[in-house]
Image 1 (cartoon, rainbow, N blue to C red):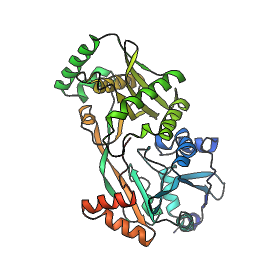
Image 2: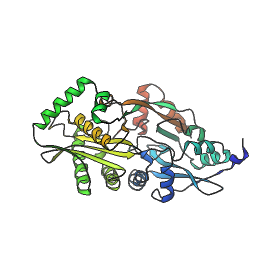
Image 3: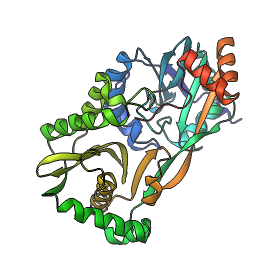
Image 4: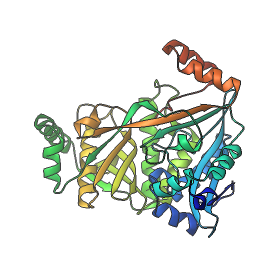
Length: 374
């Protein structure tokens, strides 16, 4: 090992770390991180969601010893899941991609600093389980840093479609000819019902009106799906509304569709480096069941993204069939899990056995290996 790299970093826990400071903004802007590590997203998550979920911050900062310059941040949490004490990325079921905040080059250098790695592994203990899910790629192999078992592919994919201008060209290449005809027909039917309009919210009042509408439409739709829709919980509604308001005009876009001035559809998403990542949608399915307003809404979102010169429309996590119908290509997600106690080892063993044992273990420990999508 090159001695120059063997003690290059200082690792510490800074649970009062300010994600809105200039230092983190510069780190994030130059990093390989995703929209789900954006300053506004993490600041809101730690300040609003974490206390409501009784999750404790575990924010690891890594600085270059020679200059004290921030080189990497690991936005982690300690979370109680039934009897299990877990250490995991800041997620709480709202983030789709989880990764250290820094560059792959800095991560590679960090791996060469044995003392820094040892310190990090000591600082994050104790835990029953280390759970690092929804890792988008292998550029920063967190399992090597944590001395954890090899990553495994998750049971669900993320989907994204490459956007090309003009919109008509993207539509012709991404959608099948029959689906294009079907949506054109649905649009004509919808336009006959009244005055149809599509826009992007540009003030606080329209954002909050759209958020309330989303909550109302999503409640009945997801009532029978697991533990229902997260937006029905006050702390999650507060989180998403705060992100939408704070990120308005830059980090966040909230699209709406109206019929005669009444909201009938909405799509909430994050903007990051030419990507638009859809994180939540809602539609008046009862009122417009046969008009496919969800698909028509996504088509309009794609049109607007192309006009704004976005390169990627990211439908994020979940294997819903409509994503492929819009040209979405699947990409795998990975998870790293490590036991830190006897109880953790038993839970991990149970989760890897037959499906019925997995289900029983989940129910007994209130432990979800694959977080429910919002």
